[in-house]
Image (tube, rainbow, N blue to C red):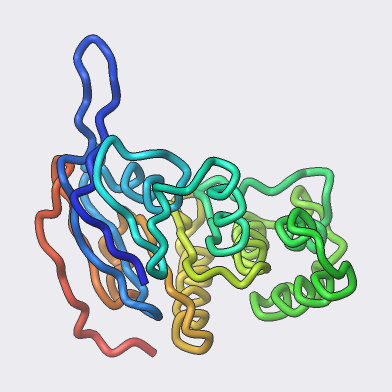
Length: 229
């Protein structure tokens, strides 16, 4: 599914910062992976390279056998819309759009049948437990509800991979548990491949493997032997 080979990222400046120093690993289809490590270890930087939000200084990224770093910028944009889903720490919902409109926005960007993607957006809001919030605006939703809208939006184009960058950082413990259990449900029941950055040690129990980063390198890979319910 995802094959990462010797990814490096250097930020230029008077004193260049080497955020990633040669990272290699693979993610199998249907896995739920966490990327963890201390602040400054390179977690979010790595996720941004994998999700084509940023471009690495060196290395190779294959997603479904496609060498995505060789794509033109236009093709990268299309690949992101068609094959990748994103959930961010700050929800990134559009305040002027309802929950339903926020969810089907990426599908609208691809064109296609309006009734079809509107129907799928409603189905996804039902999956995340917001069937009674279709017409609510972001400021009428709690933080946990907004993040569940963001999850539904990330899935509307049926992505190969769902990337989540600190998705529970702005949530209380109850809402965090709801979102993480939702991720696990999507992973187990729909086979959704998920790569999540988190700093919360307790989040390990929801994932299949943890890739630990330290100073821009993989420190260790930890397989989860806990039976998840």
